[in-house]
Every structure is written in C-alpha cells, then in structure tokens.
Length: 340
Ligand code: NAI
Image 1: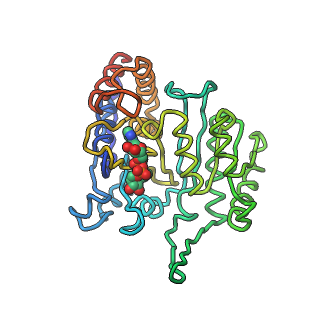
Image 2: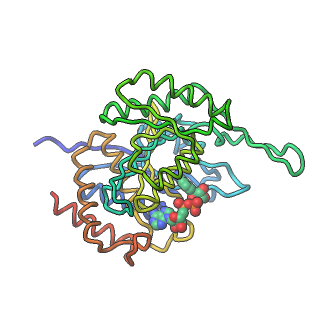
Image 3: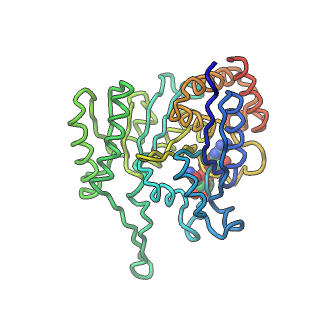
C-alpha cells in the first residue's frame, strides 16, 4: 500500500459566511481521505480587530510558502473604507488568471442544452487598479489600465487550457468599439495569441451582446477570455444560469501560487444563520485537489455532489430547500462514503 501523502495548505476562513463554507470544505476533503495540515491565517474585515490590518504579513508569507491556499470571501466596504483585500492579494501574488468553470453538470439549470464553459478573467488591472480621483467637485475619474503584457498572458492561459483539454472555441469579450485604445489593445493582444493556436476557433464578441447571448444561448460558449470588470460581471451572470452564486467555484492562478475560492462574496445578509450553501467552496476545494494532483478524490467528491443533488433533499434555501449548511454537508459526506 502506498503511504498517504500529507499536504500543508493555507486556509483563510474570511468574513461573513466564509468560516461556515470553508469549514464545510475542510470536512468534505477529510471525508475523501485527503490529509491536509491546514495553516489557518487571517485576512479581511475581521482581521482589523485582531491584527490591526486587513492583510497581516503572516498571511502573505504563509501563502508564498505553501503555494496553495483555500480562501473564504472577504468583505470590501462600498464607497469608502479600506481597499479590497482580494484585489491586493491578487496583485501582490501576481495571480493574473481568475478561472471560473460554469457547468450544468450538477443538474441545477433552467436551460435544456448542457452548459460547460470556462471563464478566464484577467485579475490584476483594468478598472481595479484603484486609481480614482475627484477631478473637481462633482467630477470623479477612475482609470482603466490595460497592458499588452497582462492581456497576452491571460489569453495564453486561456488558449493553453483550451488546448490541454481539447476545447474547440475561445471567445474574447470586449467593448473596443467604444474604448478603442484600452479594449483595442486587449483585443489586439488576444488576436496575436489566437494566431498561435490554429486548431482552436477564435471569435470576438462585444460585452453587451455577450451578456444577452449568454442568457439565451449559453451552450454556444466554451472558453471565454475577458478583462477584469467584464469578467466579474459576466461570471456572476453565468453563475445564475447554473444554480446561482452558491454553486460556482473559482481559482486565482499565477505562475507560482494558486488561491482557490468561490465566486460569491461574504453574503452579510445570511452570515451566521447557518444556511449558506457550501457547494461553491467545496467545488473550489475540488479544483484545488485537481491542482494538487488528487484528481481521483476530486472525481469522487464531484460524483457525490451530483448524487446528493439528484435526490433534491437537504438543500439550503438558495436551492429551494430548508436545510442548514451542516445538514447539507452531512448529506454530501454520506454520498462520499457510499462511493468509497
Ligand atoms: P454576495 O455574493 O456576498 O451575495 C449576493 C447574494 O447571493 C446575497 O443575497 C447572498 O445571500 C447570496 N449568496 C452568496 N453566496 C451564497 C451562498 N454560498 N449561499 C447562499 N446564498 C449566497 O455579494 P455582495 O452582496 O455583492 O457582496 C457582499 C460582500 O462580499 C461585499 O463586501 C463584497 O465586496 C464581498 N465580495 C467578496 C468576494 C471575494 O472575497 N472573492 C467576491 C464578491 C464579493
């Protein structure tokens, strides 16, 4: 018998429903017999009271050392207050690709045709650089920064991923008809990368049309590459096609470090009530397991989720049920044990 591998991974429980959904993912991973020594560190709004900062140095050091992290959502105040810790983390660790698989494989969708698309959102620039100014009273300016370097590497990440998984089509999403310079540069950069992958069909679509097409005919999309802001909006829209924010996972990938987290936020409206859907974080943990080479365990958890959902029992309120997070996790773990 081969010895069971032990992993050391950083865990950021996060704000709001974060601790509830990350502990659910920990339990599910343990049930699939993967031994992880979790290094639990702080970040976010809650970290201010405990450490006097939203992002302690120890947190960054832990992620840099372990190379892999599972993260709960972090609150960012609207309007004023501190800067987004998520954006700081992604920029500091150069996690340039935000990858979000959107699949109807779990069986929660209103569409008849199967949806199986993957969003590659550029994660380090665009309107997220935080360069905002009040130019004059009553006039504000936010700078949209697009570089050839960042656009090229997100495009490469998308095409490489498509090649490795024998995907057929990549869409670039833009608004270069209006933002001719910034989105124009993004599009030029993606086109140059596309030329290096002649086996993959390359298409371009304007972001407003993309939103409409994705609602009406999501099955036409395969791999979708977008800038930071369009990626944020379109991926939430896509999440709505397959069961909502409670079920869509994500990965923030750099060349050296990877952080896995769900698409949803800290959901302050339901935090502490014990009714958060843990599925998105469990699926994010599953992406993490695949990244670690534990594909067998990931496949077992995925199969358990499909089996669990097919019975339509023990669902949290966002999925139309009345169950708690804990009841749902218990139900999923029972299925994992069945699939031993
Ligand atoms: P949100 O995703 O937290 O919530 C939107 C709606 O979806 C709410 O009604 C919420 O109850 C529901 N929802 C979200 N996740 C759910 C789950 N797992 N189970 C059941 N229902 C769920 O988005 P919102 O309200 O825009 O943002 C709240 C906070 O989260 C903000 O401070 C925002 O900045 C932060 N945020 C953090 C993210 C991250 O850390 N990656 C991503 C998105 C938002």
